[in-house]
Amino acid sequence: MTEPTPVPDHTGGGADTVAARSTSVPVTARDQGGGTNGHVGDRLARRLSVATAEPARPAAGRDQRSGDEVEAGIVALWQAFGQRRDQELRDRLVLHYAPLVKYVAGRVGTGLPSHVEVSDLIQSGIFGLVDAIEKFEPERGLKFETYAMQRIRGAILDDLRAQDWVPRSVRSRARDVERALERLEAKLQRTATDAELASELELSLDELRELFAQLQMTSVIALDDLIGAGTAQASLAETLPDDRAEDPVAALVDQDSRRQLAEAVERLSDRDRVVVTLYYFENLTLAEIGKVLGVTESRVCQLHTRAVLRLRTKLTEQA
Image 1 (cartoon, one colour):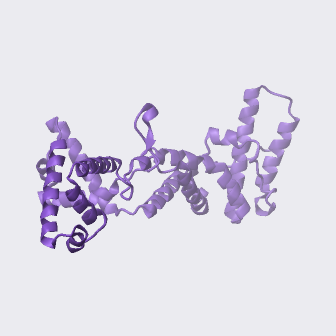
Image 2: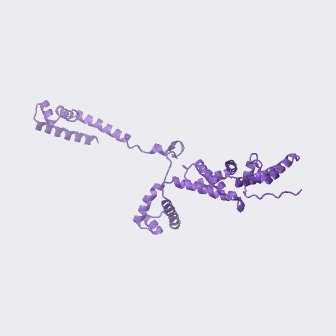
């Protein structure tokens, strides 16, 4: 009996991926309904039956044989999916190549800020993997992993750009400024001035300052990031000032000023103290205070002026 010709592997599945799927992936065309792909199903069925009938071999041989069977199963799965675009077949391919998404998301995430979650990148990459499976053409002889990684990376970057509120042109200018600063500091061995940076970028000082104003919104930090060291660590949100909160220093100064003013008022003469109390604490007018004291309004004005001068002198002495 003539040995059947092996089906070429267009998927390019790695050894790690194949080994991870060895217990759940083997698929034949017969499993998916037979029909036009029956020869591949018969060939896989014969290989599986022979493997069951053969005596036990060393572990390395069994692992190699299991890997070959999984690769053949993936080839058959791709052929079945190419003949009928069944959702169940696509889902099985997605599960098989899912580790690619985690790998690409990890590589992309290394250059992103800490507030970007890798799980969000993986979620975006799954859509790229599904799109790659839908559009992949095995008959071209390309490795699926190479094609899929580009589609996954593109899907992740597209999602990141969609969430970014900063225009891409501003991001590009920010990178230009960073590279110019690196070149200047490496050449000058010191911090570059604004004039030197503007000359390097071929801009005027006004244009450079306008560019800095645009780049301010590109700097983002998470409020839950910890700052400080050791036991003094605190989140950034805990260090932000509350404009509506009372300033404790101002409250202490005000309290001390009130105490000093009260002591100064106590040292005034009886009449001066009555004038200050009625005018500032009882909110009486000078005419009303004159009626209380039995003097004219002009005399009350003189008493008030004298009391204020004495208070000012006493407070200055205490200070």
